[in-house]
Amino acid sequence: MVIISSNRNARYISAGRTLAQARYRNRPTSRGGCGCPIIIEGRKDRIALQSMSFIGPIEQVNRGWDQSKFVTYIYEKYGLINKVDQGPSVILLMDWDRTGGRLQRTLGDRMKSFGMRVDEQIRMGLIRAMKPEGKTIESLGAHSEKLTSYIDEFDPTDFEEE
Image (cartoon, rainbow, N blue to C red; front, top):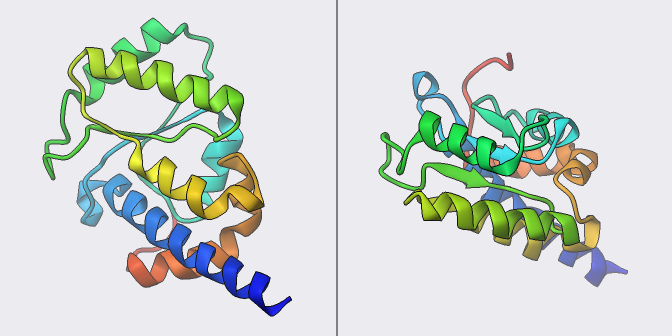
C-alpha cells in the first residue's frame, strides 16, 4: 500500500512540474508570463484548469465551429510562435482518450501545416503522470488541491485569483 501511495505522490510531483510550466507560459504578460494560450476540448476542461490558478487565455475547441475555422482563428490570433519567449505559439492539450488523441493529431497537423509551433509536451507529461487517475483534463479537477500545491512549488504565484 505504501508503494502505491509513493508512486501516486511521485506522479503528482511530475504532473505538478508539468502543469507549472504550462501555467507560467499561459499567464498573461502583465503577470510575468508568456500569454501562451492553452487549447482544450470544452467548458469542464477550462473549469479544471482555472481551479489550479490558470488565468491566461484558454481556447475551447467545442464552440460550434468546424476544425478549419477554429484552426484559422487560432493562427490569426496567436501566430506562428509566441512573441514573448519565442517558443510554441499554443499549448495543445486534448484529453488522452481515443477522441482526444484523434483531436490532438488532427488539430496539431492542421496547425503545423500553417507553420505554427505547437507545444504537445505538456500533454505527454500529463499522460505519463496522470493516466492512472483519469483520461481527461476535466479529471484533473478532482486532484486540483493536491496538484496545485506542487504546481505552486515549481511556479510560485504572487497574485490574487481573479
